[in-house]
Length: 360
Ligand SMILES: NC(=O)c1ccc[n+]([C@@H]2O[C@H](COP(=O)([O-])OP(=O)(O)OC[C@H]3O[C@@H](n4cnc5c(N)ncnc54)[C@H](O)[C@@H]3O)[C@@H](O)[C@H]2O)c1
Image (cartoon, rainbow, N blue to C red; front, top):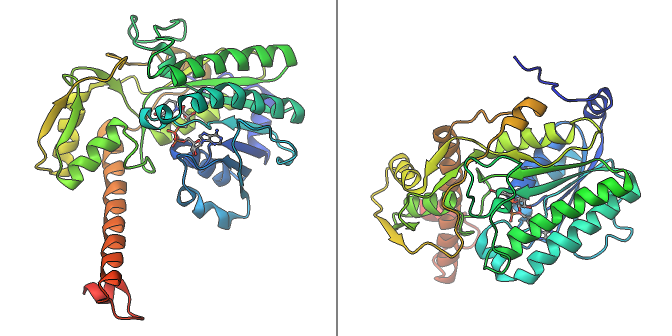
């Protein structure tokens, strides 16, 4: 059996025990908020840097009470100046991740990946800090090799609707690797495959959140394409565990590492699974596949297993149950808020009474 500390140098293990100051860019987003939660839980002081493009205060609000959590509203495309206190590590997650969001302003997305990553690298250099960069399986494009190992160089369109993100993330990997080598910085790059879990936005167009919200609302479940295209879904807690292990892995130069769940599911199977779990009467309908949508995705995680002793633990059914419960609660709260607003505007919500009193 592989030791849990596989690949960790003595100094990295000591750093993991030490209480650190850690910057998380994009910390108010879906993945970032789980990372902040984990780091604060481990006793570190966390500085969340976010421009709130797709992130939400509500995602990290609960961390404020710890006394070890600060938020700086900042766009990483702009230099940090003197905004950051001294820090030991920086995780660069800032970048919209869902196609509707990153395609809304493609130039901004490309700049976030390029100039934004450069600003994070410069800050890391100034503070002699380690940098973790959140890359993506999108750098493999529509892959001709299956499953995708880190040695595969990808099949990416340079000028399509997804290119601002795919090519942006490819450039960020190059920049981070070269900057690290030229300046003696420890750089860790995680190539993240589809990740899901609580705090995804209900309307951000990713397949898991789309299907769950449509099923809970009893609307048609929209499958793009035939549904035979595959994805591999990693639950967010597993991913965060992979981040920590990769960040703590030694000091020697290391190439990008795939982080994802190797269990492959077709999009059609996912739709049926979610519909069954929700007990929904929604119909599954089919629409044309968007341009450049990849047909197959599955990470080869041999390197993550060998170097980090990491592999995902949460099965799809378990992760989906937790995610469905989250969206169910969110939708209930939302409909309570709408009901409250309606009652107030209709002036049938007696002043001073609570919504529960008025509804009951
Ligand atoms: N969730 C996934 O399945 C997945 C897969 C591959 C890669 N990733 C990567 O992981 C990271 C986080 O993804 P996510 O799913 O949490 O997305 P998200 O959209 O929920 O979070 C991104 C966060 O970055 C912030 N942000 C965006 N541009 C910024 C800028 N210029 N300056 C400061 N903050 C900015 C947003 O406000 C948000 O809080 C991204 O870099 C993404 O590319 C995610």
